[in-house]
Amino acid sequence: MNAYLDTARRVVRTEADGLLALADSLGDSFDRAIGLILAAKGRVIVSGMGKSGHVGRKIAATLASTGTPAQFVHPGEASHGDLGMVTESDVALVLSNSGETPELSDLIAHTRRFNIPLIGVASRADSTLLRQSDVALVLPSVPEACGSGIVPTTSTTMTLALGDAIGIALMEHRKFTPEHFRTFHPGGKLGAKLSRVGDMMHLDIPLVPEDAPMSEALLVISQKGFGVTGVTDAQGHLAGIITDGDLRRHMDGLLGHKASEVMTRNPRSISTESLAEEALAQMQARKITSLFVVKDDAPVGLLHIHDFLRTGMV
Image (cartoon, rainbow, N blue to C red; front, side, top):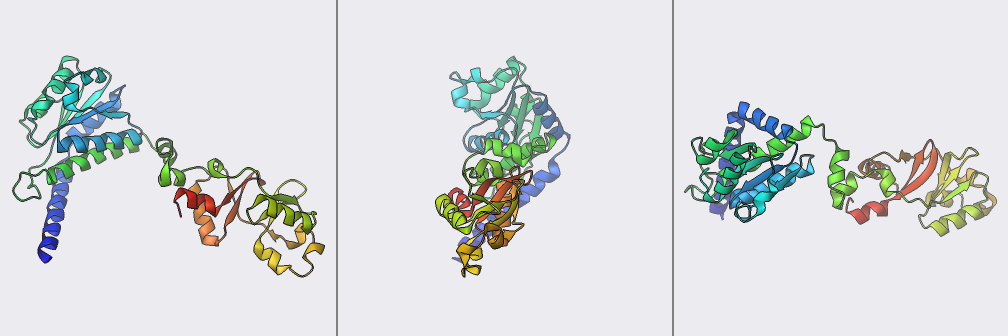
């Protein structure tokens, strides 16, 4: 069993050494590659064959989700009609460890014919791909983690990291914010965390005025189903909240009280523009299950812990 663990550590360390070598090797060509992409009016067309193609799909997805329009084009399909997707307003990012992948020849020729900027990524500076490229990004010569040099491992890890570096450099240049990120990730846990409170809140909320009898407050709590009710003052501002704990503390003679006499004053609230993640953090820190949403101090919505459970954030 230790032999397996030794292998795993050797592989990870070999690839880590490759990443360090890549970081040290980056120079002016990286800046020029970013410049070409920023100057393009169209998309980044990413292409590669085999393992490079798999990495290319991820790079294209990273670019597209961080504000740089991108599309992966399979080189084989490109030779059978998909070259029509690659226009003069685009920039091509082509990946090949050897730089001699024959399936890329038609795509490379297409970029040269129509003056489409070409960024090549390969491990040999004298390869066909890099000699034809407007900007050549050379992967450092380091061992593959397989030991025999036949399985793309360190090389694909370096290519993936280089793609991430390009994506993040473009993202930072464009001042890409979490709000922008949410636009491209509306679904799932990540989308929920980056949602605005105003996008998640319930609009049909339990509210009673300060002078409401507790019989009315209990009816509202029961009807709305959140286990709480907000209490508003004469100006319509959120003055307090009545929870299960408040009801228990005033159990004796409860129905003889008014809402203002039972409520907890100055309850926690949050604005409609706050991120859902901030609202959840506040609820967890305070150990509360409901949080009123306010605008200009007036209650306009309500968040319940169940809303976060449904999205998988909790």
